[in-house]
Image 1 (cartoon, rainbow, N blue to C red):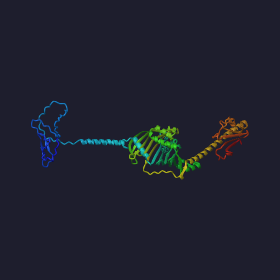
Image 2: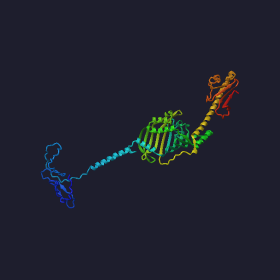
Image 3: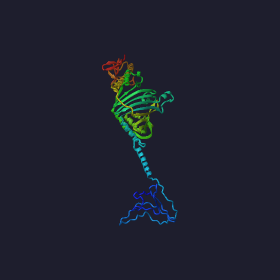
Image 4: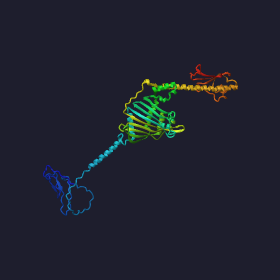
Length: 524
């Protein structure tokens, strides 16, 4: 290729300047630009005489610097092995003047390729390293979400819990009306959280408890609709309020029990959380990440128009059960009834922008129990959603609307104790009736009663009654609260006095005798 030569402004005649090594190619011509033409010089290749070998094209060489005096010019090293001389090619016609077609430079293609590689490599690095990228590991995504969630000062939440019978015993007649109404129990929960340790919530429960009695300790086939179960947690204190429907028919309760129910339903009940339970719960939450068996990232979704990442979390089932038992949520016996089938999993939906959890689903947890001789399995599903825009304010209820749980429990235990006391007193009276029958049988055979000049107690195996009445009574009764309470006997052979000590001092059949309140039986 022949490079064009720019005209020399200092040599307008384009003469060969002094000291220049440039000369037109041999046999070629240099054409001066004419009027209206560009200022470039053009050259034409030399024309070979007929029957002469073609003259090779000449190329512009850089200026040569003559060697300095006394220097020895070193010939260039050989570039390769020598070959025999080749005869010149046959004579060919003179080719037409040759002007090479300008070719586009290819260096920009390499630049473009490098840029593309940088973009691709940088994009992959961005995806791998930046939070939420396409290849961002699910474990790191969950960890980032946990950090963001723990940094929150407050949030609102809602939850839906479904307990549904499945498998054998879930309904003897699926087409019956009662079976259709026995679809399970649903609980709806609305609540809020405020740092550092304040929680408030209200729960509504609705559904049928058919085939769930073994779990919920309520009569089978009993429908329930409880509205407004409320609770507030402030630090170590829990306040709760229960609806009247929770206690069933109030007419079946005593007047004292009805008063207690009114206190519970009209006021807030305050209970102290034990430090042990709180520490166990905190330890469980701390150990929860250790129970994660695997985390899988699924297709992205939206929750309430918020783009989210979808993570599937599988827990170590055995380790989870052990931790729940340590926490006291389930007993060792209940541990064998809880099942985590193949469908048990936790789905977590994390926001793409803020990395906060927007929805949490727990499915496939099952509880098995015997119901009417058949195995019944109940499946539990939980779905929980979070709202970070609602204003949150959690406060303890006013002091004049709070009643201590200890006061209620004392009243309940007092009422229950009174009932049990009456049951024991009735048993005492029945035992004395059996002893009276045995004494009359003894008198018929011996024409007198067993003689006891000093108090003889039925709990004395070597006593008068124990020895005398053995043929007439299989086992001599003793007091239900023996030895604190006991049965006594005195007799001169012609008559006797038999008594027990009553606990209920309001019993009109009892008699005060010093410190004791006695129920007395005689032979008259």
